[in-house]
Amino acid sequence: MKKHSARVAPLSACNSPVLTLTKVEGEERPREHVAHSGPDVQSSAGAAGPESSSSRRKLHCCIRITAVQVRKALWGVAMVMCVCSSWAGSTQLAKLTFKHFDAPFTLTWFATTWNCLFFPLYYVGHLCKSPERQTARHRLRECCRFFGDDGLTPKVFFTKVAPFGLLWILTNYLYLQALRKINTTDVSALFCCNKAFVFLLSWIVLRDRFMGVRIVAAILAIAGIVMMTYADGFHSHSVIGITLVVTSASMSALYKVLFKMVLGSAKFGEAALFLTIVGGANFVFISIVPIVLYFTRVEYIESAGDIPWGYFCGVAALLLAFNILVNFGIAITYPTSISLGIVLSVPVNAMVDFFTCEINFNTVRLFAVSIICLGFLMLLLPEDWDQCIIRLSTKLRKRDEPAEGSAEAGASTGLNWRGRARTSMATFSH
Image (cartoon, rainbow, N blue to C red):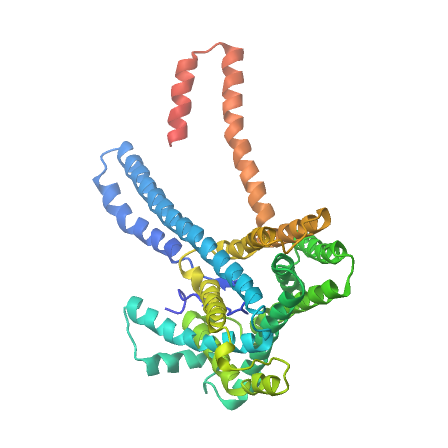
């Protein structure tokens, strides 16, 4: 049971997923093959019998694999659209909220409090999908084992949970502060650099495998940051905004790497419980900060009725949906689909900014955004991408060589080409 469980590292509100899912289908197919191979071979009367049975089994297996892949691909397309719309929508709505109530920390606190809904929503899904339905208390007790044999003790909370809660709040607060300074296109594009920062920190701290292509991607990300700053002429307003969003991306990367180093990975229920605890701790311990900001008139509004509750709830709901998709979308599709949804939010924000005339698309800015997105996509390449290309080229070469060899042999010897064609096709079918 533990072998087939999906494990996920819950990420900050703006991060891409790092998920590991055991491929159960790959373990079930060999058992099915062994179970059916005996009767098929015994029922065969000659050499053609086992070969035809084997071909039918291979065809059935390929059809089933294709159906699974098509289903995951369709879910992937839907996931890309949902992730992109939720992330771009929350960014645009937060930008619009600041025109009515300029309170980035209050918005951060309000949206983070909605994380308390993670575990209740997970438990509803558990009741609907799991064949072994457990009570909420029993399920909660099992998920608490993620923190150790003693569960969630005060020591564990202040040493292993509270620091990640602070990093979560810093990530979102700095991101929202950057939206007050610069446009949404630059903010969303610059935040994509967090994946490059994750690679660099993982390489240094976690001793992950060195990959030249990811170093190139990190260099592209840094170059994009410099070019983005140059696009606005190094004005103080834009430099502050760029610094804020780059710092937010760094906090997000630090959150991810430290979680991997300190807590490892978590099952879906454990991740939901962790995020719920972060939301609850935010409500209990951080609620004093918006009150202080109100009385000091840093984030002040005349009355509670003047607060744009619709915008506040919209931003919080979109961020909650985004985090659910990012952290638990691996159950139905590939992690790459989720990452593509994040990077596609950049052109979506660019289109909105273009039609609202809030951005000047000069050549430097377009080039900077392009190379940052290119670096993000390069970081999505698997670790054995070079080996995959070598194997693919080898297969293509081997497939072309027999055809060329047979054609040259037929031309030089003058043998019957029809007989050659039949022999070649028979060999290929086997």
